[in-house]
Image 1 (cartoon, rainbow, N blue to C red):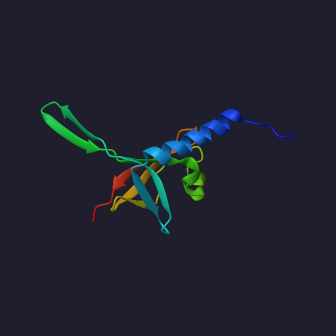
Image 2: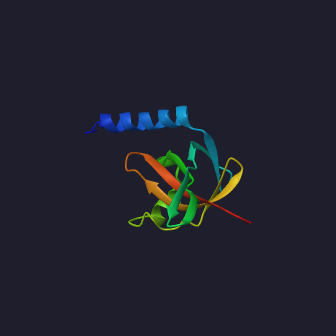
Image 3: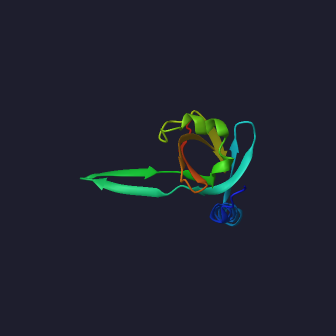
Length: 116
């Protein structure tokens, strides 16, 4: 007997269409594999007393099935471990700091710019 999971099929369709219509960047993984996704690098500034603090948290959102399979085993039960991988987005090299799967078919890679 084959079970039909109509919501799962709809969820996968929505994820594919979201990336197809809203992707604004392509990430290049080691080995040259390219994946379309949504790149964001929000700027944040806060004040601590009389001192200011500036920060950016670049992220790359992509379908979870596009995340290299070997990354999943490293994150089993520990989604906040540092990944020893790098990707290039818009010509800039980033270290992948975290992989945050949302449980609904999309993943966010938290990035840190690699400086020379």
